[in-house]
Length: 127
Ligand SMILES: [Zn+2]
Image 1: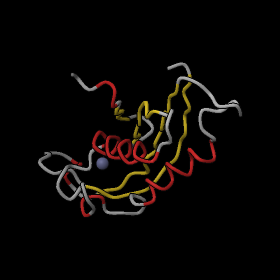
Image 2: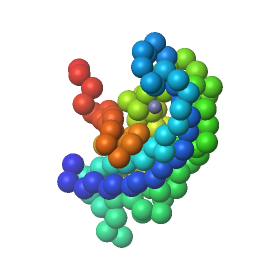
Image 3: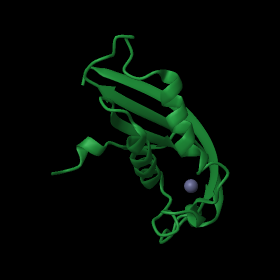
């Protein structure tokens, strides 16, 4: 798809990884940065794929539930590990539900530090 928008946001949350041997099995926190990429074939008469104001609002809505939470206590992370990979997928699915026609979710990247990030791309799922 020729057009892609990139929207960034961040949230702070605590987690600990289950079935993990190492520092991350203990309760700790991150300031996650989230990069949301939206894609589309064409822009509207206004020259936009999606107004950035609207795109930022969609992402902020989804992130609000995670901000300052203990992720292991809130669904679906009460049953699946709150890893950066799973966070990226859950954020992607929740944003995708809110997108207007003609706008696709290309990817979500969750940065758990300046040096480590996970990306989920729904279209890259093996068929
Ligand atoms: Zn961690």
